Length: 405
Image 1 (cartoon, rainbow, N blue to C red):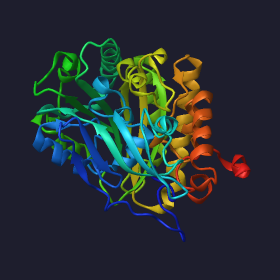
Image 2 (image 1 turned 45 degrees about the vertical axis):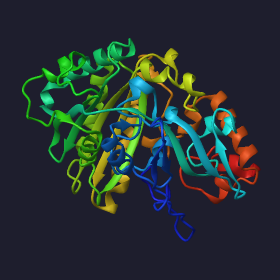
Image 3 (image 1 turned 180 degrees about the horizontal axis):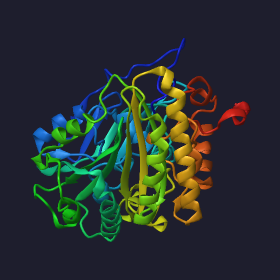
């Protein structure tokens, strides 16, 4: 969430959790307790030295708390599910000041609610995460000319289908189409294989694409990969995110890319403009795992088929360009969704951590999940502290709906 007020407040109180950044591994190395103010680099620096890992963020500077309470994709998703599905226990400070634990045996409704329910229930001061043995892995970036887009869309669909079938759960792909001041410039693929085995066959179509402008693919560790991935979104620029979910379909993705080219053309001369049209396969191998760990709040399951998250990431320098960038992004999302609906290839899910302020990811989880989330809010936050006194982020009740508090 990148808009003003999402994680801060003007003329109000901001609670800084950054000092609560401990990373403690259990004696049997099967659990890691992480402070609510830690960043993923803090976690990986310690676990890499121990030959261990957790299913966490893919960018080193990202905060642990936001990613885990918003769902969380990871390099290990096809093996272990979303990052939130790997939390064993939450330590939470409620609006009353009471400290509770939430897990499958204690406050289990709060436990499920926190897996996607974001900042609506309390302040999470500790996450206890499933931990597993992990040595070196293989990955990095491969850059191709934009002219290879058509084959890349097909390979992305093929990968989603193969991953969903359980062919090889160790591979993940981030497929990004980069637009600059002169239009679409290159395709940046980030590949990760969670074994130290270069060029696995499941990624063979992608890695065989020619020509290749550059490649950083190598055997390395998790810290190194997440630092590299974060370098693509440097600090100091204005940023905007927007997202939608679609069925993994090459023809659809090609059409959406055409819409993106048209949408970004009028704003490509904005100072320091760069836009990324990022595709992330979300296969049934990922969405089928939540049920094994107490469920989550996201509302996604294997019955939805193999999906793709579209993440629009825009960067630029000047505040005067805010409206133009926002309008272009909103129009692109509206056109993309309308077309996908006409092809019966749209999924209602909105990934909260990539959502625009105007989007409503909570409602996209579906009525059953929303009902559970609201029930948990009434039970654990009966005064509505995190609905009314903590206005940032995505609330369970929006606008006039909040009047009941």
